[in-house]
Length: 303
Length: 303
Image 1: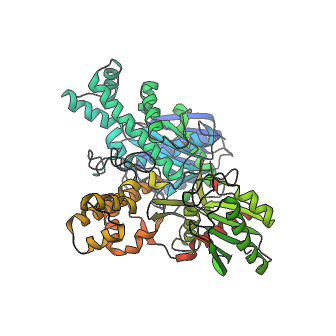
Image 2: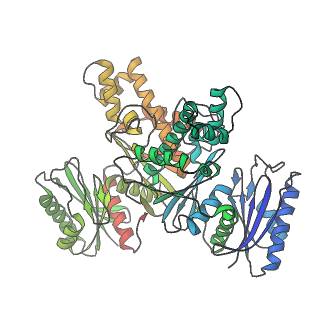
Image 3: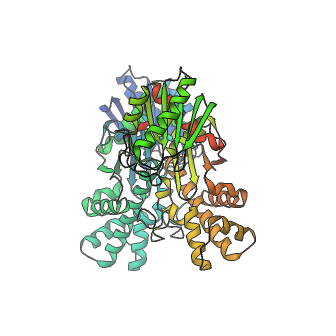
């Protein structure tokens, strides 16, 4: 079976026909910012183009940002795409394409690709962690995405790691995201240096040995190690896969995270930590894999 | 199929023949404190007694305290039973009984009983939480116990909730257990009142309106709410089942936990929280259920 995977991002739509994790053909276009109707038309257009080339394709997966309503096949809203409030993605695409359409959130889709075909392909259970502007993730057990009872499984960045710490985007104090994501490091750097400092500049300063920049980086890495350790105490995955922009800093940051994780799990068996492998195709491969799995007759595990 | 469930405790061994969650017959005796050989002989004896009464029984499950080596079917050690270091429970019982023998840790067994036959029997995913001297638990997905890659799944009491907080039994600071278990409440009460205060006496003082006792109880409940909320952000279970000695205090404590959980998940869908239902039989029912599941041909989910 050759499903089509669609990856809906804030700036571009990526699409691919995928055969068991291998990309056969790609399409790409800009994401319309003119409302859900146009976004759906654009998604349908790239999908149709691939379906014409691969008429044996029988399912379409869509990886989407933002909170999703899995039951109704809708996007609740997408922070970076205009006019997506309550967009009926599954029904609208099914109507246009005549095939099974499966919706998944983008972090779950990317993590599922790594779990099935990438860095975690040999693991029974894995947790995907995106260290980026925010912190997100996905949990995979066997051949399944663990969505959870309300679609919150894998919302690991909202775990509380420092009660009473900085207030995060969800209004709670001391979440992992609020103490260790790229945006929170930039917040702390801008405060410390009394001017706007990006995460990239912060890392440059830290690499140059700036004491205060290093303190911010060390602090974030320590909390990320704690976050991973906390996941171990709940589900003890066979391994973690790390992806997202912050990992592009490389070992300068990741060695600090590994050290913090080792400290936070001292006395326990050490979980394995791997880097994401699939690069830019991760979103389309994951969306296609989710579609293939659901088309196969079972459902990702839920409540 | 009628499996036999054995529940090995620090002071007594409970045993039962169980038919799909219903106890048909019970046996009980003291736990020998004279070494693994005698413990194994005692377990075999109560099991044999039940097997004679139910000759159709074809599997035996054993719920055990202490860290287990699932792969080798051994107890690594049992804190409250003398001489159990590296005890080969599975092989020794299999040799004596001639049946499939399945080992499970006691919190997982109890939680599995509640998941299949008790408070969570209608839920696809549930997490069992024992609030007792310590804090432990188990995670259940579909019809499976999630053991994790190294048997650490469900070791939720070791999650860090307050980095830099009190040192816990595992040498790490600020674990859930170190800030909210019965023993940690007693520690804080004994410090505050400058004399030995039990958890039971602490609750009595708090119910009488003692300001300092109430502060300890409120603080522990707040962290327990946070711990439950953190589990939601990782796997979003359909519900929690709470058991263990501390829950016997009733709503005086549990209402505080519910309030703390609601505060810690404000803005997210609210998870359901239920009280354990199965009472004293929970251990034998769970051990029997785990045996029935494995005898049925599959394995609890692991690494």
